[in-house]
Length: 137
Image (cartoon, rainbow, N blue to C red; front, side, top):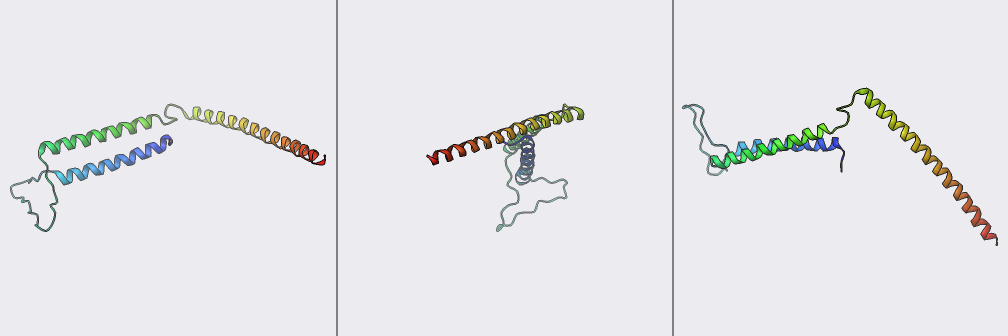
């Protein structure tokens, strides 16, 4: 599972894709209307596909509603991810203190690792000595 920041970036990317898909849905399936009596709708040529594939109003509106709900759901997911990011409820001092504590834990773990490496080397030396003594007999 990826970290929260990566999840947030992916969610924002998906939201942008949903915005684009919604725009293209509306652009492709809207009803052709004129704004004034002087406006005319140009007829589409027979050899070209129509620019607009008009849907019945109820189908178009249902599609818009579904797309709007999808956008709202994605936006809520983004808000949740933002609220779960570390540091939003902590002051700078709290964050610095947390970093110091983590550094101390890291130092302790590094000392333990060094001791384990030293112990491993000692065991290898003893094993080597034992193997050499066995070869002599």
